[in-house]
Length: 335
Image (cartoon, rainbow, N blue to C red; front, side):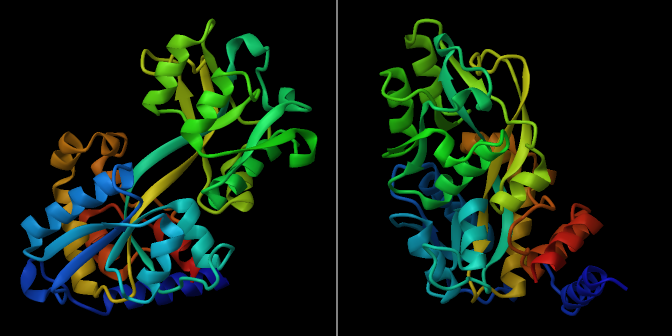
């Protein structure tokens, strides 16, 4: 047997070693605190929504607690001081590996569910003449963000799909993704990375003569290549539409996910109850919280998570028929 097969068998045995029944009788938690980004952010919106759901469905007093960013509350989740957290796959992958700014690896944190998919790519003005990442050579390009280390590494990985390094462009630091859009519009940089679904992109596209353009990944932009460059990064398709007029044709861009993750003190019973509450109430959550609409109910447990799923969540997802052999293989590879 291969090492991964052995690990998968051990993981499956561990998951099957406990019995869970639905309902609050088995819950161990007295209170749920969900770590999020600052108030007003999408993560705070989603965290507040999940807190409301758990309080109503599980009868556990719940609230969202804003922080400066994942690097502030992932260590608290590891220490059991915060119950849950909304984290990007990039941040949770870096924290799991103990990569800076995370001083210690967060090996006790586990995933409950994927909640938000973010297609992510470089963009430029249509009038720039830039159509590929290779065209960025020698250009002014946003690579670093003052407040987000994980996205800086994602940006480098995206550039590398076209064989470019930071030395091949004139790297510029930005205050954030929204600030980067303004820098392109104002002509201060030639290209910047953005989440393609941002409403700010549509507004900017309408104000710039000729509009904006999303730049597709380079020839090396496979899931395997992206994942090696940055854990949690993968490829996805984007198609021109009324909501995304800046996407020219059918193209491939990078993407990463946001997860609801569990801290070290979450029991199997509680993780099971949370996963079930999310899955069975997903349609209503999508109505109430628009960012969730890009993820189907049966796609909240994909097999490309950068940290393993919580055994309690696995138990429920197996019963629901959405945890597959691919999930088990991926989880085992993270152990």
